[in-house]
Image 1 (cartoon, rainbow, N blue to C red):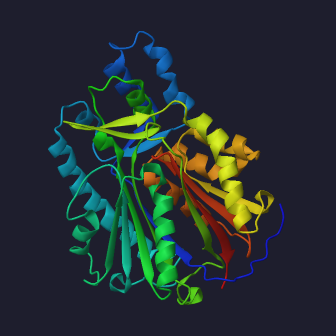
Image 2 (image 1 turned 60 degrees about the vertical axis):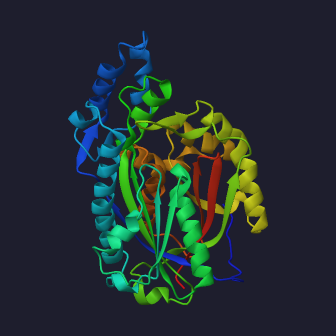
Image 3 (image 1 turned 120 degrees about the vertical axis):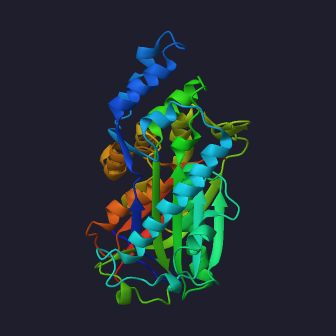
Length: 375
C-alpha cells in the first residue's frame, strides 16, 4: 500500500474514545436455531435447509434485552416501545459512562458537563422526548447541551452520526461531542411474521449500544488522549441510491415494525460500492491502494464478502468486522462503533489512512476517510 502524507489544509476532528454496553442476555447461535425451528417449521416445508442461514452467517453469540421466553410471547407495540425506552436509557447511560471514563483511551475522565452536543442514533423504537433527553436527567449534562436525535438510518446510522458530529466540530472547533447509538433490534421481532425476511433477520440481528467521543481541532488531543495516535476524520460522504426504498427498512403495521431485507443486498453492494468509494477518494486526492484499514459495518457475512469483491481486496481487510459479527451479530447502527473500538485498541502508525463505512436504508451509504495522527 502507498504512503499518504496529509496536507492538513483543513481541520480534522479527532475520535478520542469509544464505549459499549452489551445487554444482559447472551445467546449462542445454536440456541436461536432451535427457537427459529420451533417458530417456523410449520410454515416452511424446507425449514432445515432454510435454517442453515444461522450457521452460514458465522455468528456465534448475540446479546439481547430479554431472555428467550420473552420472544415466544405476544407483545403489543406499546409494550415493546415501553421496554425500548426503559432499556435504551439504562444501556445508554452505561455506554456514555464507559466512553468518557475509559482509561485505555483517555488520560483522565471527561466531565459530562463538558459535553457540548450529543447525537442520539436509533431506528428500533420511538420516544418523544427522545432518549438523550431522558439520559440528561440522569447524568450531569449541562442543560444547554445541544441535542441532535437522528432516527431511521438503520445500519448506516453509526457512521452517519460520526459524519454529523464531524460537521458539528468543524463549525464549533472547541466542542466535545458524543455519538450514542442504541439499537434494540430484538424488540421489533414479530413471532407471527412468517416471511423469509423475518427468518433472515432472526438469524442476524441483535441488541447493542455504543458511544464515541469526538473533539474539534481546537481541543488539544495530547491533553486528553492516552493513545500515541488517534483517528482523525478528514472527509465524509453521504450517498443515496435513487428509488431504492424497498431494499431494506421497516414496514410499520398495527402491532409494530416488520423487517424489510432484500436478498439482492450483496449484489447491490458488489456493483454500487466501488464507484461510489473511488469517486469519494478521488475528491480527496487519495487512491484505494493508499487505504490501510477498513472499519466496515458487518451487515452479514455475504455483505462483507461483497465489500471485498467490490473493492478487489482481500477478505482479511475485514477481519475486525468479521470478529464483531461473530461475537455480537448485526446491531444495526451501533455495530460500526464496535468495529471502530477494535481499531482504537491497535497501535496504528502516524499518517495511516482508513475508511469507515456503513450501508443502510434508502438505500444509502455513509463513508468517512480517517487519518491516524498524534497532533
